Amino acid sequence: MLPFYEIRKDELSVIRNLKEISFPPHMHGYLEILYIISGSQRVEVNDQMYDLHEGDAAMIFPDMVHRYETTGEASTSEVLIIVHPKLFGGLFPNLTRFHPKNPIITKPYVHEDVAIAFKRVKRDDDYTIKLGWAHIIIAHLLREIEFEQVQQLPVQDLSKKLMEYLATHFTEPITLDTLASEFNVSKYYISRIFSKRFKMNLRNYLSMLRVEYASMLIRTTDASLTTVWMNAGFDSQRTFNRVFQAIYGMTPRDFKNNVSNYLK
Image (tube, rainbow, N blue to C red; front, top):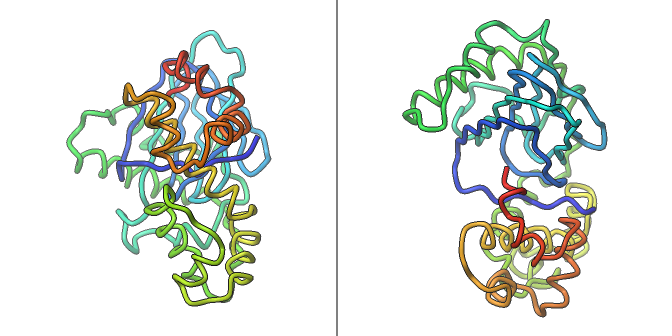
């Protein structure tokens, strides 16, 4: 199953789950932190599977492919904090240049203030309160992380500019030639960025963006599937169905009929 690039609306989200979650492979430009209050949760990060139990935490850095899978635990309570790195300015290391060698922090190494913060923070808290709790959590957990540098391309900021451009224009017809013209570089150089930085070609990257947008429309609106695939930028319903099935493992109609089971 291809990963998709998740488009998030909020710069800071707090999500409490009272059961294990199952969510397909995806990545985004946010820092995602999971904490298990009770029970367990299985998470895969960059092709490595981990089982988390009570008191364990996971720190998933920006642009790391990850997914969630259930372990069959009868009862689980867990908290997710998903936050954009820009909210912290230069307070923490550049999270796009470094990744953790191991994203899991087991219970003995989770500071007691982190456990308190996760139990206290709420979705409906004032924004500044949520940000304060996030600072406490991240500051403590980063002390337990061993970093490794992400291999960078010579022109570091072009990949970011491509992501920002495509996040805005993905519903339009886009090719390597149009991107080369937009950024005044060779289409072969752009192709190399997708191969080295995103580990996929432009077509698959656009498919991820379009399917994620389509799934958001299905989750949050009553639009017909025809309206969905047209608004998401697909050129035909057949292509939409094929790509959606490849990424989500089910047809758009099955997803629409069971949407409440696939919310994260």
